[in-house]
Image (cartoon, rainbow, N blue to C red; front, side):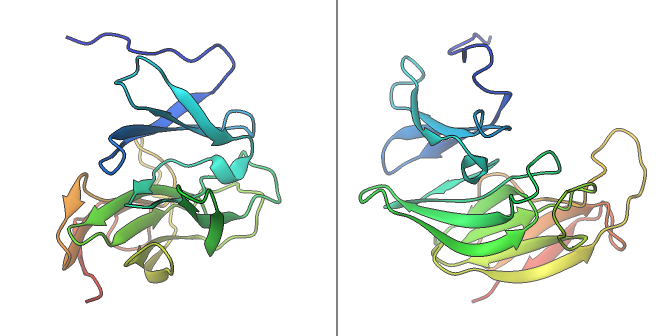
Length: 206
């Protein structure tokens, strides 16, 4: 069975992007979008009896995914083709103790999914959305970081719209859910020039 555990007020958000478990604070984080006013982080410590707005109000708080570590939240912006022309996408790292937020990398295109390895390394899939107002590369990409402080682009895939119905028309990376091994990432890209909708295995940095 399923039941409604919480409802946002009408006009407060467009939609929920994701809900993520924070084992360090025993908390669920909720990401929402899409306009400046609708983009925010919320959290609940009591299984949705109460839901608190943490911060938001502009595109830097527009995130699909986030990863909670012992002291930080890390995410990539999801400012898509509906975002203002000055909304370049970055990776942010927020210290939850000091409340200091750092911009640690530029990714240009929107970040969708993140996944964590068993040792805590982070992987981020970056999506190309045709029609973006920003001049960003026409490619999907995978970014990697051991701690969230510094990031490297591991691989890119040139965009090619395969014009197949029933799926996104974006260049998009699908990683697995949950925690993955340290050595490899199994993923599927779509709308790319080669290997469209194939299962690919990427060796991760040691």
